[in-house]
Amino acid sequence: MKLRLLRFALFASAIAWGVSIFGVVLPWERAEALLEGLGARPVPHDPMLDYWLRMASGAFALVGAIYLLLALQPRRFASIIPAMGWLMLVEGVFLLVHGVRLGLPPYPFYFDTSFCFAAGGVIVGCANAAPSPTKSKC
Image (tube, rainbow, N blue to C red; front, top):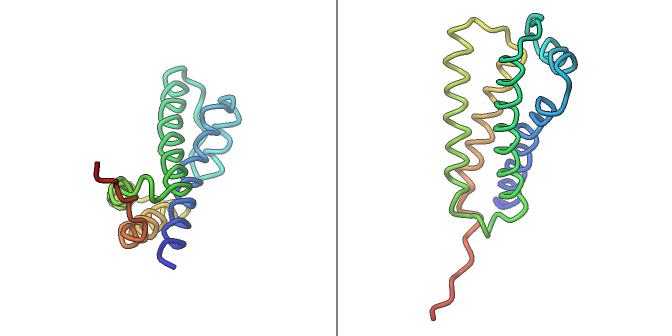
């Protein structure tokens, strides 16, 4: 049961981080429209902002790929699972501190922060459900 819960949290994290791939591949106008749908104000095109969007989105999507790999093969990569759970918890703290500091509206701030705390807590709490494969003694 703990392994299923762990894998669920890892898959959910893979999706939450991996959806950022859209920021890599969509034209600026479409990406900016999606950001507006999440509560951002209109942002005129700026080449440097365009570049930073692609850079950050690429990094987030790669983090999502790591979570996907962990979800698919949790026993093989058991040693990194606790660190990835703590990554989510620390990210939740960053989001909470800066969301409150900036006075952000509840959507999507509450969801993002809650997701990081919930998924990170499950990953840390269930990390021992994926014991690493025993190594042969040669």
